[in-house]
Picture 1 (cartoon, chains in turn green, red):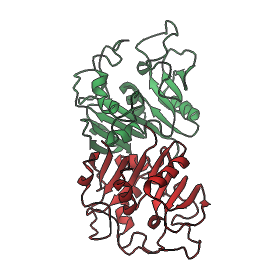
Picture 2 (cartoon, rainbow over the protein chains, first blue to last red):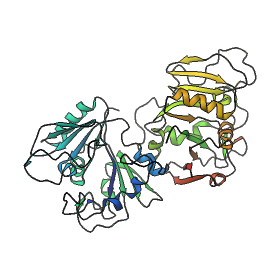
Picture 3 (cartoon, rainbow over the protein chains, first blue to last red):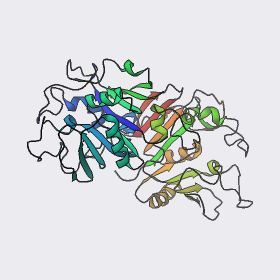
Picture 4 (cartoon, rainbow over the protein chains, first blue to last red):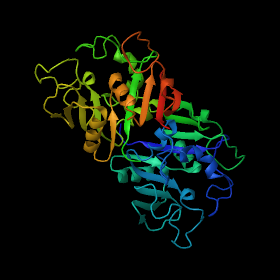
Length: 214
Length: 214
């Protein structure tokens, strides 16, 4: 089937927002509380950021443990990488993830303000300016035959959906209401013209939406 | 957390049977129709026996694509390997799976009638006589740090459950009724004393049961 572009473990509020407003260094998700949005994932045994043993191994864990299966590269938006806007004042910002980012592949950060690539642990960040199709082409080449993860945020996912480049999309719809923020959709039904969908409630409180191309 | 013993993609009838009666060369599942039992898995993009492109990529596919993730060995019962009973008349029987069995790891076949190990494609079959704990110990050693899959059938899974050696168990409960056959359980509720469980209906018609140790 060739290389897929996959969205995985992307969590939105019940009203369709992937993050709140007013992102800052202290609040990567703006007024949204990431602990509340991602509680379903953090409770699983396979959550990539887990540091303690334990965790659930049911439905939600199937999803978090699929995070890196056959993934060879990630594409993310500038705002997932950094709270900074505009030209890079300096290059000291290296992401939110400490010395061992969980990606462990090449990562392509979309930005109009390129800067040199750098590596941190097993992850290499590249900064690219281009339309979705050309960035995807670069990421697929870097992925060496494996799939590419589209890491978000919501604006970036929208751009790739609008360009019809997304093959599979997993979105966990939380019960949290945000009211405003960075919108993924008004309703998951917007994607039903192009995608098949499985809608699966989890006892953790989120409702998983699994989309794949018709 | 160490190495897990995992049951995956094991399908039973609504009344709790993993296979029918009167297994034979022509009817590996006895009077049960495997096409009917496994239709949920066969429809997915990641079903290990799939030969054609296509297939669904929703809930059921998360499960079939987890089949070989971090698996380093399999344990199976004699009746999963072969319809023959008693001492091996000869050693020409090499399983149901053709020249490329889907396991691609060492496989330990439980039998009171040992025969020499052999390799087929990327799979090596070993024939072992022993109690579940000692066979599991051998399989874990062969798995080199990865998990061990307990491949069935129902009788073998029961033996390992009774010895309290199973860490996670995924069973797809089909809508098919068999009436009689090789029983896994009377009801999935039997396992609730020792296991947490997520019960997740799929639109393919099966209800997935994901168990993990309390």
